[in-house]
Length: 162
Image (cartoon, rainbow, N blue to C red; front, side):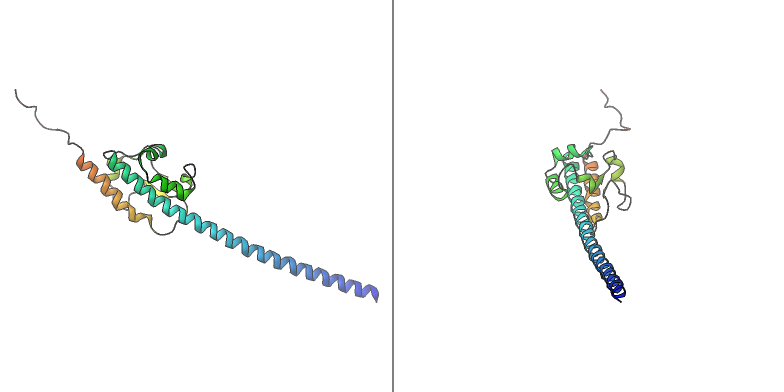
């Protein structure tokens, strides 16, 4: 009889332990999902703001440099005060590429001829909230205006007669 009672209480103890482990696992899983969701949300928020500020910085660069396109983050950083805002959102110059992709090899003449849908020279990396694409028309306008301001080549003109 005593042996039977010991087996029952041992069985109950294991059942209680299994239930407690399951509860702890569920709570741990729920906390992990909250943490993971919050982290993804913060990354998306940082990505959107970093992308918007990068658009502004490059637009500023294009206007200051007669339509030239920046060739690196360092070149952009030296020219545009908006990069301070980008770095504030991303956590520094070494982390900006985790949030924003820029094609530094892009041809500004080719970009100026693109439609809003074709433009891919600046875009967020990973998930982001909102729409960074509202910045594209302003970028295209800056590229097109600086093309209009560049001196036209005298192609097809005859040299003045002496």
